[in-house]
Length: 85
Image (tube, rainbow, N blue to C red):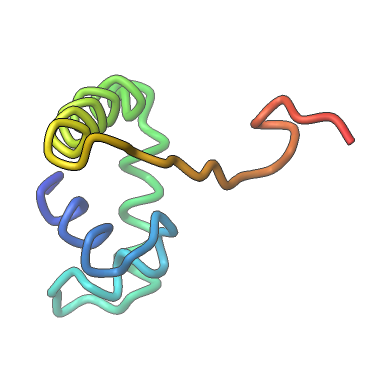
């Protein structure tokens, strides 16, 4: 299940569930798949940050070793990024 999520992120070029689910092959409708993923990610037993951090570190380490430089762009609400106006 998590591999399809990663495929959806990659093919959808987005981290938004509605874009990710467009790329996951299923007989279910996009809103149904989106609701399912929302429930999975809201489950307190699933620690999304811990899982994603491992994957992100591996990807960034591999990219840094081949490219030498990485530029990260943080996108999110100002409050989540601790940015004051």
